[in-house]
Length: 417
Image 1 (cartoon, rainbow, N blue to C red):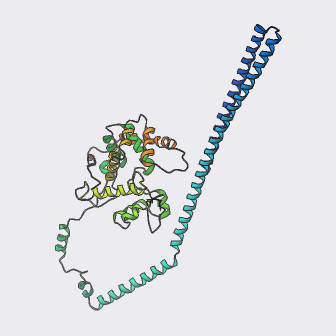
Image 2: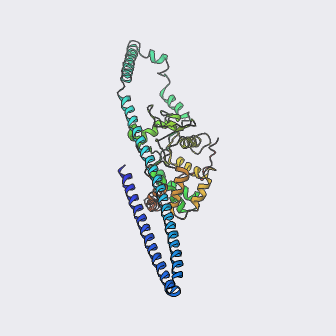
Image 3: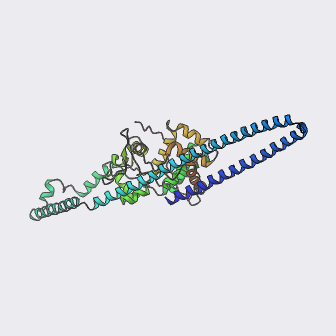
């Protein structure tokens, strides 16, 4: 909040300075106008009136009427300026009240969530259930061990746990089974995730570096080009690392619905809006830190198609953090009908900061209470463009004998199947 207050103070000083300079300019202009009117009146008096009492009387009456008209006109102008300033001040005060309320609500929500987490940790009923389960499991193991001591092998064989199949035959049976393997990435065969994204985006934008950097600057700010990146805030409150969270999703310990609703250990920070739709507040994941229910559902469905029958990764295990899959998902967003207009405008951007702004405004739409608009955030993110370009073009560390990455040209996936 101190950062916000500093921004407000600087803005108020800037507004006060502008108003003071405009008031000073208006006063100087009116003084110059008064001197011009007085000089003109003196010339008329000296040239045309020349002591004629009747003409002097009419001249004084006309000048009095004009002075009255000029004073009223200036008063109306000052009133309009003051009213406009009051309206602007009221709008700023209303905006500051909104930001303050949003900050207080967020702070209260975080406080209540931490209380729930502490309550879960100290829940006596949960502790009793865990103790009873542990005792029951220990008793069961003791009974099984006692049976095995009395009649060796009888209990496990009767339930098919111990198999009499010869070892060599068992190995052959396992080898014959088609079990998907997990795809291992060694920095993507010599290139980084950042460089993979660069190659695919450059291909999509037909070599347009400005458009490519506009998208990549946003992705770097969100995830640091880590496909398995979980929002840092959730790393803290859930006490879980990125790789642990990803592994739970891949093994379906965290099922699809829990992933979509950013739910872990029955704790979540979302809510249902007035339309009955679930709204996530945190739990961003992946290159784009996809947070909303719809965006996370799109990523999960795309991963299911990618690793499903006929997909590019059908021979591998499901992996929500697969860099190649997520990179193609970013391309599929740009190619979709929903964001066709955004894609075209990003292509036509003259500066990287303009492309960053379009991605923020039309796709990401972050809810940042410390940012009045997306321009400040766009400039901040676009500042990393040079570093990204250098990292993606300078690939001297890649040896000549390393194979090119096995990427799929285009997406070629119908995610509506």
